[in-house]
Every structure is written in structure tokens, then in C-alpha cells.
Image (cartoon, rainbow, N blue to C red; front, side, top):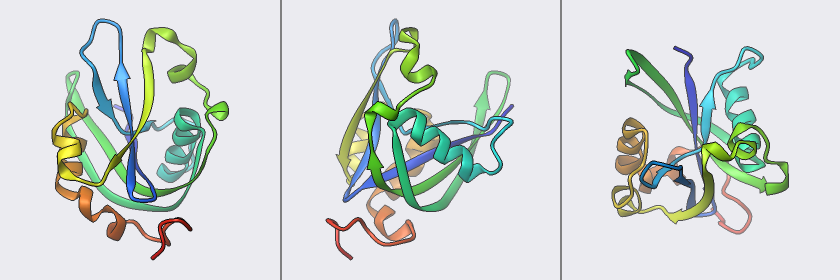
Length: 154
């Protein structure tokens, strides 16, 4: 099973997450990311590609945070979780199946405060990533390398 990456993207003191509305499923939330593709040179390359596709975003201070594994469709799914800071986001740059295929539903970007309740009050998937997030969300600004955005100060 191909590994995946997930990006915990900070925009000043808020986390970017998707509110997912998919036909036939209850609403849920997730953080951006996706599978490693054959052309991806590194996990960080995968992360940057996925963030550009799903958010139209460029990021800095990419920091490995954790790796989670869990049972999935008869195998074990591994997700490499990175933290990073938003540099720029242009929705016009979004592309790929998440944007182009209406059957995949709607990806609404939300900016949530770095508070545990912001995660525990939502159905965030996958649960392994949600568990990491709920335990570490308030520490993310300290865990992610590099300077904060100009408006966030340090």
C-alpha cells in the first residue's frame, strides 16, 4: 500500500483543514495530503505537490512531526505527518481529482484556532491523524521549524 503524507499547515495562529461534503456520507474534516506518486522524489516533494494541488498553496518550514499507521482495506496505511507554515495560497492554482471530479464532493478550506476542542468537536479523519492533532495542536507553533509569518511575529 502506497504511503501518504499529511500537512498540518499553519496560517498565522490557525490550522488549515478541509470540511468535506461527499455525496452519501456524513460531513467530516481532514487535513490536506495524499499518496506518494511514482514521480515524487521525496516525501517532502509529495507534500508540496499535494498542497499545491489541493490548496493552491506554497509553504515554508516543512517539519516532519510523526508517522502514523493503522489498518486500512486489508492492509496497513502509513501516513507521514508534516507541519509547515503557509507562504501563499491561490485557489486558482488548485488542480487534480479533488477539484476536477464532482463525485469527490466539496473541499471547503477552514482556518481553525489552535485549540484541542477545534479537533475533538469535529469528525476528523483519519482517526490516527486526528489523535495526533488533538494531543499536539497547541504545541504546533513550537514544533514547526522556521519563523512565523510576518503578521504572526516571533
